[in-house]
Image (cartoon, rainbow, N blue to C red; front, top):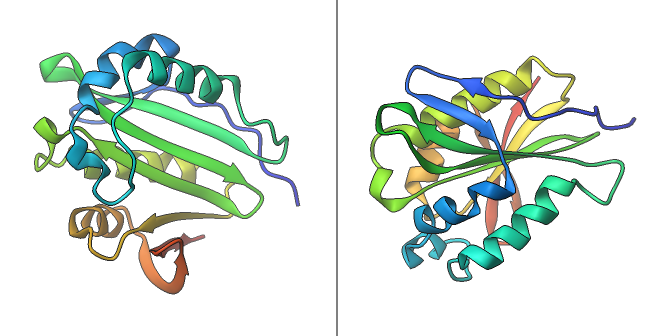
Length: 168
């Protein structure tokens, strides 16, 4: 079974625009993602604008594996006319593995939940076998986002994180 070939398209919600990632987003996103606290559960440190630009160049070029499709969006809060985070899906024959991050100043406002729900709804309209995410067991906010998006925790672990699944 091969992975479906999908292309990120703009997704709109009541408050948000999920915009396909562009290299040009790197400067603003470096500010959005600049808080070291965002790396508590995933490790690493915030990228500089230059490093993020290089990373976005790789991401927008697409996966080097023809069996995998990378889909990446920035989250734009329309009312404030600013970027607030990202959502992404890595699609293979097994399904779509999703992830999300919202910058510290915008957390606690339901942005991650709204964006992730919109992403999952979009993926459900695609030929994707399942939607899954990996959530650190101590990250209650991400567990709440996964739950709101219809994913449920499984007994499977990967790199210290719990696998969450929304089967079709």
